Image (cartoon, rainbow, N blue to C red):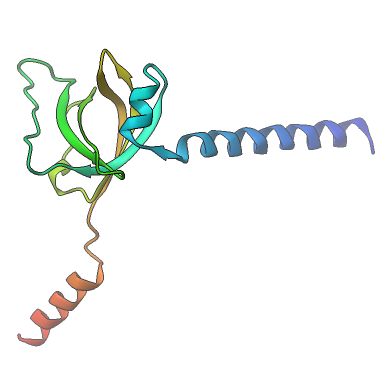
Length: 135
């Protein structure tokens, strides 16, 4: 093999390794218990919005802070401070994935991904089919 081929193989291996490492580290979700046991370390916490408690967003006080409660996959409810304005559709989301860390006894999320209900799920499809056949 010539030097160019060897360099190219090494470069591809580094790129693939970096790609795999970036996705495997951020894809594992933990509960609030582990996050609070390791303050200052960034974690992904997944769960559902606690609909019994209010979502607080006051742009006149702070445009970059939304406060709400999340129920993690272990059933632990915790207040979350999202360092962003209130996302559209937050209350309708099926699942939330928060990326953040514990600071001063509170969970601060820097990023949030929402899984919203699909308009293509089976129940909606059956309802739309029934409505269409009644016309």
